[in-house]
Length: 369
Image (tube, rainbow, N blue to C red; front, top):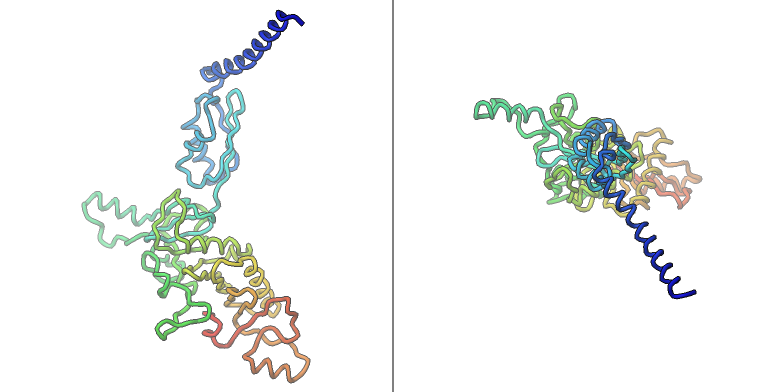
């Protein structure tokens, strides 16, 4: 092959490469300025019905008429910056004029009371919303009109249970984790010679009827914290994060019926509606603790006895209350030995592979409320 032929082929190759790069760039440059590719239709997938309309309006307000070539995931996320429950976004540009947005939302997991205000928090710890109190709004309006609050106006929001809730009034904010609002130690220990009363369902604050919560969140379990929260941020209180992880680990029926969780630096106690109070201790070995909890509750169901307290802080030796009747024994000697030991819910013939369910007549000894 001659040198001239090689040069002609090299020039042809270069020209073809330039053409391959230049044509798409030219089309892209033309498309970014053409009215043909302006967004005229926005299709939204994955939004919950309660949020879909507001999200769709926000997208239309910010992106309708925008050139489709310029729409990116970051731009869509910026358009939805006011919606903290948006977890993930994917964007599909359906040329010539349709934008498809698929979103995944955080799922509300608990109501957290902080500084007298109620916050909706996801299981991951993200703060999704803050509730408004109609009494506070009315008070603010009266103050703006007359320069002084209306006599008899409500105090801080969300701090008094509604009359229909059947619970006692609760002072704003969180009781200190080491005070009467916190769980007693699993072993029923005392401080200063006086045993602490274990918290019950009546100790848990509930949002008042005047507190406006997002749809479907009023029945969520309650957690109390003294750490300030802000919408769109992540909860920094490690006790709240621990309580959220325990609630997430509960079996579905128990998670649905949970009234709330008390959390200290070393202990998480879950209060169930019409069910037992569950002492988890810390968040270690959560899977084993849940398995032990299932086994304990299963034994109480088989005996047709309502369980009021379960301690799975040591999952290998769970405790339950009230005391279960001892199983049938083979000899009188074994029966008298079980009676002398204070009574256990598992007999001598019980296989060692299953967790034992123990309960003592003394509430202090078992840590039961």
